[in-house]
Length: 204
Image (cartoon, rainbow, N blue to C red; front, top):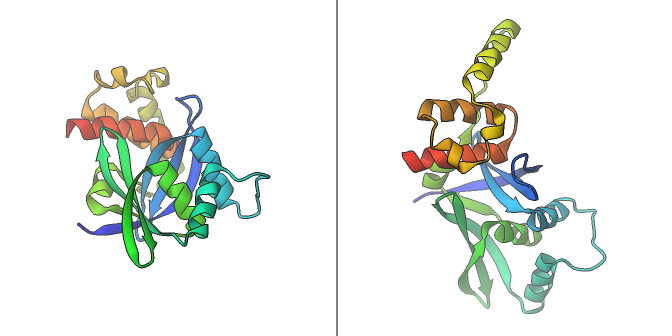
């Protein structure tokens, strides 16, 4: 299976799940995005690592791991998101010490927080990106056509309050879910898009 390199596109606050965030990964040589729901602490740790000028007064957990690894000459070479099961991503941290390579299981959010601190590349397998990636299509349209499309979407998509409750998805067709997915992506609500995408994946 071929590996696809990913970059961190950004972090957005969850509109449907209190205290959760959506980490947006983007394929380097493509247009697809990979949204991953993470907790508030991990989101903060990743955000601090992205903002090079922010230095917490005391080391965070991931900073402690980095300091510990540096002290014992352990290098994180890369992170691989290697599995997706029921909407949960599984990752491995590839480490090296004295030219001996070790593979350590990790939560994806922790693995990415460490990858940033070690300046290590992040990868996933092509089949995972094919399954869970969101492809953003850019179709320029006239203003009136765009307004008409938005009107149709509003008419066809169920009430937004239903979104975020997994039980509500069971009553929707694949066509309705795909329309909701397009709307969520258009609104840049990637956490919601990830939930809808997971429901579509379960049915395929």
